[in-house]
Length: 131
Image (tube, rainbow, N blue to C red; front, side, top):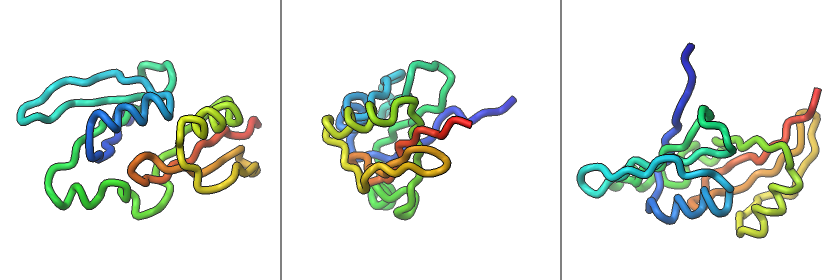
């Protein structure tokens, strides 16, 4: 069976991205290996599962990639962070300085609020409704 293992997120700086995703969002740093030319292979994952989808934090190379930082999905929500404790995670993220673009909403599909990562990419914090 196939599965998506990693999604690349273009970042400006490895260390500031690692800090944001681990400290503000609570992800785990699972790989940080040097590569030739000063590049690094940096992977972070949310939660405790070892087999979940991870983010490959890739430092931008050149003007074209730098121009995509923070706008990798054209201003749409491009990433969805599911939680089992919406209120707790929302409060923790606010305290860590995460910028939410709206107040929490309670929709038929669950509780949700849009936030930005440190570069401006839009994310949903989402606790799906229980069937």
